[in-house]
Image 1 (cartoon, one colour):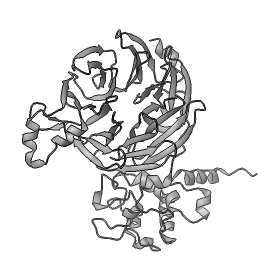
Image 2: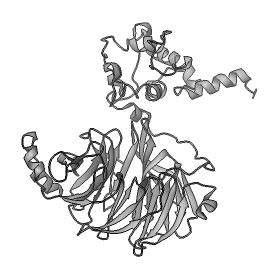
Image 3: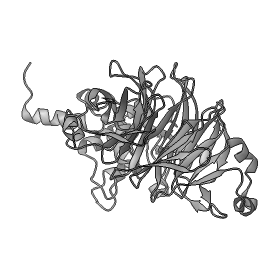
Image 4: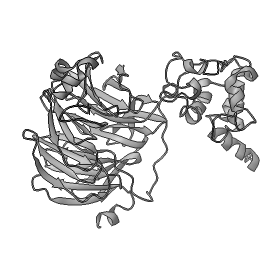
Length: 483
C-alpha cells in the first residue's frame, strides 16, 4: 500500500475530526445522525438547546431544527441551501452576522457537509424527529484514559464493594478500583464517560452502575463488569451529563437523573426504558428509591424534591421544604442530595440552606396546597423535621445508614448525626477542599469521603479515627498515600 502524502494525511485527519465526516461519508450520501447532528451538538446546542433558545430558535431535536425562530425565516429549505437561513448564517462572511455568534466559525468541511445535506434533500435518517440529537447518535466510544494523571482528579463518586474490601472511585474516562486496607490501585475500568458522577455496586459485587458524561454535551448511564473491566450495557444517553443513578433494593430497577432536568427509570435485566419524567425545571442532582418501594425521589437545583409513582412515573407530590419563604425554617436553596430511609417511607434531603430535612411523601402530599394558602401552610412547621447542621457551605453528599446520617459539605468537613434525635455525634475533619462524595460500608463500619482536590479519606465510624488518605491519581498512588 502506498503511504499517504503529508497533504493527503492532513486532509484525512481534518475530515475525520470535524462533524463526524470520514473518507466514506465524503463519497456517500450525507447522513443527518452521523454527519450533521454531531456538529449541531458541539457548536449550536449551547445557545439553541433545551434551556437556551437565543433568537427564539432551538436545535436540540430535528423537529425543532426545522421550526422558524424569532426572525420568521425558514431555517432549512430542502434542496436550497442558499435559501436556508441556517446555512446563510453559518456561511456568512460577515462576522457580525455569522453563527456561532462570538465564537470560531465552523470549518469549511463542516459548512460543506451541511450544504451537501441540504442539497441532497435535508433528509432525516431516523424514526423519531422529536428525539434529542444526542440519543440519535447512540452511546459513544469513549477515549482511553491517560496512563498517568498529571494531577489528582476531583472525586465526584465513591462506592464500596458489598464486602467492603475494595472500593471504586470516579476517574477520567474510567472507574478506579482500590484495595480498602492499603489504598493500592487494583484495576482500572475504562471505556467510561469523561466525568464519573455516580457509582453503585450491584448486590453481588460483580457489576458497577455508572452515571456521568460531559457537562452540557453528553450523559450516559451504563453497567461495567468488574472482572473484565468492560462496559457491558448502556441504558441510555442524555443531551447533558447524567448526575445520579440508583438501584432499588431488589436490584431490578435503575433510576437516573440528568442535568437535562429529566428523571428516567429502567429495567436492569432487559435494559428497557420504563418511563421518563420532565417535571423538574433544573438539574436533577440526586435520585433515590423510597424505602416502602412506592416512589422514585429526585432532588434538583430547582429547590424541590419530586416524588414519582414508581409504576408510571406520574408525579405524586412535590416536597417544597427547601423553598420556604415564610416561617421558622425559611430559606430558598438548591437540593443536592436525597436519600430514603431503609424500610421506611421517610426521606432525607439537603443542599444549600441551614437544615437537613426529614419528611414523608404521603404526609407531604396531604399538606400540599396552592399559592392561595402558601403563607398559612409555610408559617406552620408541618410534619417535616429540620436538623440544624452547622456547616458553613452547602451539603453535597448524604448517607443514611445504621440510624445515622453522614453529610459532606463544601466547607471540607463531614458530620455524623443521630437519625432519631438529630444531634450531631461526630465531626470528621482534614479535607481542604469541597467534599463531593461519600460511601459507607455497614459490615466494616468504614466511611469514605472524596474531595474536589482528588483526596480520599478513610474513616472508622465507631471511633471517628482517620485511617488513611488516598489520591485519585494513577501512577502516583504510593507517593501520594505516604503523605
